[in-house]
Image (cartoon, rainbow, N blue to C red; front, side, top):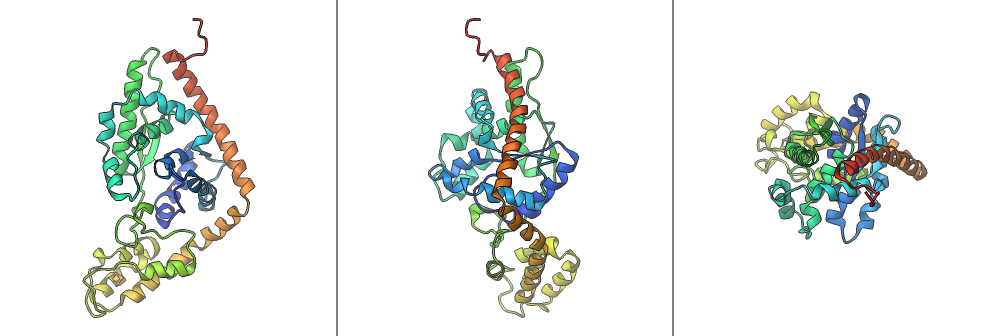
Length: 325
Ligand code: SF4
């Protein structure tokens, strides 16, 4: 997860809840991808750095447990950059150019991200994964092409360093349900679109955002019947008020409920759902020393695994320190 801004409810509902389940069944690694954040924050990295501690507080508040999973920051494990350099040499540029996210992000960002690093970020992503020789990567269906690229890079590396069997694993997708949360403008909730409801938003901010949320554009007047399926607010009933979903859909279609009341229902439930998380979050943030300790211990564990991989790779490739051989 990149430290590019405060987390929003899309992260909480769609990702963090899932991570918490995964740590129970797998030996899991969760990484703050601060080097990836450089693709956007390359002129002002300190801004991204300041998001790391709050991000980890959010992880802990959501239930990630450093006793069960490895929590660490990418740049604390230099092997990520080392493996990235090596894998870059095995990755044809044409593979990177066909990455659909490359074009999409460039079109949607109001910042110049036309850099070598941005083109090559899938290789860094491959290094992040392959360094731990995992069996699975928990992803949503839309990320399958990215994982396939990682598998292709691993396969190509293994092909050219075949002696002694494959060195890098070709991890499989652990298809996880990461429900997509709609943003206030009806598009997918994303920091880059500026349509997010942040976990740290005050009650007043949450209320303003809900009030300003788009609804079915056909409901111009209170008496106009609506089509709930066309309304981003309605999608929140899935998360916060599933039991009332059918009833409110009918009320919307018959115009027996106004958008103001409909939004108020969501707001109240949103506040109630987030309350325990928010309380826990404040507690975690008040103890930055603990966060530092957790990340430091996590980096040590990650380094141990990474060192084994890099030793095997270095030996196989001949990148060893004895220059008199
Ligand atoms: S009543 Fe609710 S579901 Fe219907 S358009 Fe208004 S906000 Fe959306």
